[in-house]
Length: 491
Ligand code: UN1
Image 1 (tube, rainbow, N blue to C red):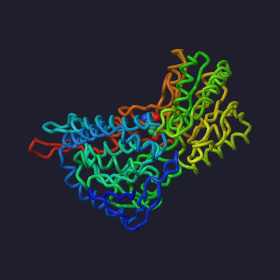
Image 2 (cartoon, rainbow, N blue to C red):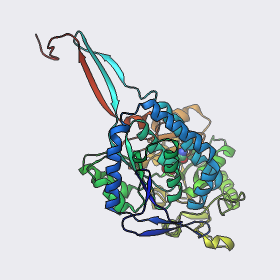
Image 3 (cartoon, rainbow, N blue to C red):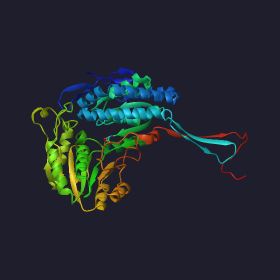
C-alpha cells in the first residue's frame, strides 16, 4: 500500500516521488510505502493551513467542539480496527492498543466540551465606566510532531485542543506509525473538519520536521520525542520565536517502602515496567527499594518476569510485544551490556529473543537487574525498553533523593501504607506526575501531563494546561465614559 500526504483534504504524492518502507515489528511483514516528503510539501501544507485559519478561527467554538464529539463517536465505532492496525504497526499488545485509542476518545470528548468553555475572565477596571475582560485567541498554524509509541493518544492530545481553540494544523507523525496517523486525519475530515484545517505530511524529522520549525508561518510547535531532538526543536523554533511545547524523556521510578502491600507493588511494577515493552515515556525503569522488603520483592518479580510471554501483540496469549524495530533492540541490548560491565547483577532476561516465530521480529527478553547503584548509567539514562533496575536504599529520604537526582522528572510512584510516607512523597518527589500505590503509567487526559527538568520545557499537555498552550490571551478594555480616561496617571 502506498500512502499519501493529505493536504487540503486531498491525497497528494510527495513531490520527491520517494518512499520508505514500513514493516510490522512482530512479523517483519511489509505494511506500507510511506512518503518521504520535503520542504516543498511542507510549504504547500503550511500555506493551506494558513489560508484555512482565516475561516476556522471564525467558526464558532461550540461548532468546532461538536466536530470533536463526532470524532469521539467515530473513534468509538472503530476502536477495534484502529487498535489492530496499531498493534501491527508498532507492536503493543491489543489491550494496550485499545487503551491508546480510548485515550484519544476521552480527549475528543474533553476537548469537544472546551468548545463551550474555553473560559477567559472578566475583572473590574480601576477606572469608572470602563469594562475589562481577558479572552482567548487562537494563534495560527500549529506544527504537531509526534512519536510512535502512542500513535492515537499523543496526536489527539495535541491536535484536538489545537483545533477546538481555532488553530489549524500541519501534522508530521513518526515515520514508524504512518497508518494510524492517516486514520486519525481521515476521521477528523469525516467528522467535519474542513480540508485545509488539518494537513498530514509524512517524512523524516530532519527534512519535514526541520522545514516546519523553520517556516515563518508556523506559530506553534508541539513535540514529543527524545531530549536530543527536543533541544534541536527548541533551538530552531526559538529562532523564529515560536511557542514550543516539549515532552521528552523519562527515567521513572517506583519507590517501595518496607510497609508496602507487596502483592499490589508487584502488579503495579510489572504493568508499568513491561507494559508497552517499556516503551512509554512514563514507563518505570528504576525500582528504589527499602532494604527490608528488597529480597522478597526481588524473588517475586523474578518469578513473575520469567513467566511473561513474548509474542505478536495480536495474539491473546502475549504479555509483551516486540520493540519498535531491530535498531531499538540493539540499543536496549547495549544498555544491558553497560549494566553488566558496571557490575549490576543480572537476575533475569538480558538478551534478544529470536526463538521460533520470534525470529521474525524485534523481541527482547524482559530484564531485571539487581544491586544497581544510583550512579550507574542504567540507573540514570533512559533505555526505552523492558529493562528494570533495582536500587537498594535505607530510608524514604534516601529513596526520594535517588528519585530526584536523575536528569528527568516525568512520573514517579510510591508503594506504602503509611500516611506520613505518602504525604512526604507527594511533597518531595520532584516529578510532574506522582502516583500513590500504583505504577508510573496511566495518566488520565483531564489532568496536566508532563515533567520537570529535562523532561520538557515547563509546559504541560492535556487538561486545562493544553488550553493555555494552544491559545493566547487578549486583554480587552471597553471605555464607555465618553471621555479620555488615563490609567495610572494622577489627576
Ligand atoms: C507516553 O508514553 O508518552 O500515562 C504517553 C501513560 C499514558 C500516556 C503515556 N496515558 O502511560
